[in-house]
Image 1 (cartoon, rainbow, N blue to C red):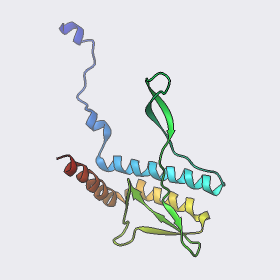
Image 2 (image 1 turned 90 degrees about the horizontal axis):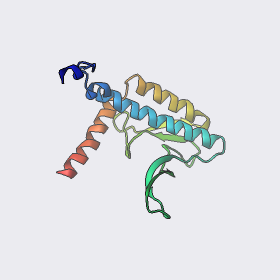
Image 3 (image 1 turned 180 degrees about the vertical axis):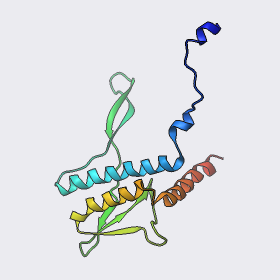
Length: 151
């Protein structure tokens, strides 16, 4: 039996090491969300409709089997327009609005043509780690709610 195991290349690495630090994972999740917002903003500026889609298992009506299908998913854009025509932007983690600085959660974008450059600037700040503290606080609050509700 030992001769068979010697054919395998064993390692000390673990799956947890591969995932990286929590800050890196949260940062990547936020970058992905910002990229999705950029795609939606580009579609809106081009007069197109953006629809988020994802894969889900559904029961086939004819056969009754579970099949994987692409379905539309709920999408909430982060920007809105004020009555005077200015565009404002909320940064969200899940369904929670983030305060980038205390008592300041919205970003004044100006016109719609500034929306994509503003989102790109925000993405650069996230990638540089400038929002790590805010993101980790939001993550802990979100994880804490799930822990409290399951106990």
